Length: 125
Image (cartoon, rainbow, N blue to C red):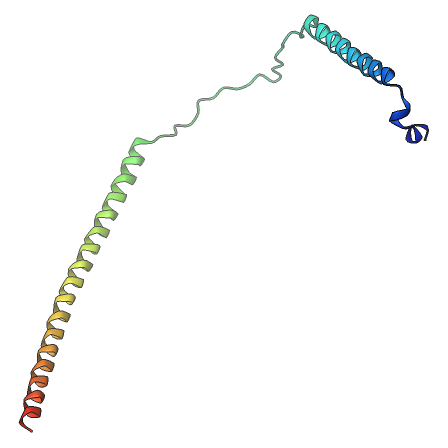
């Protein structure tokens, strides 16, 4: 409670200055002491405790050339089949497109002929 009631203006400036100077000096001295202790401390000898002794086994073969070739052949065969199906679908679409265009052309020709006849009949009247 005593510190809560004290005001900083009541403390003389010289005392505040010396307090912080001494605090700063103590921090520096502690840092130097810790640095000296850390410099002279020697780490303990490194020992490896191998109980039980590790076992070394040959790792299984990760790459199987024959299996990779077999998979490549299978993928290649499947892709060739898909390419053939896609080409067949395109050919069907092109043939259907040509047939639709012929049908529409014939219908439009019939419509134009009918419009011409209607126009001729209208001119007569």
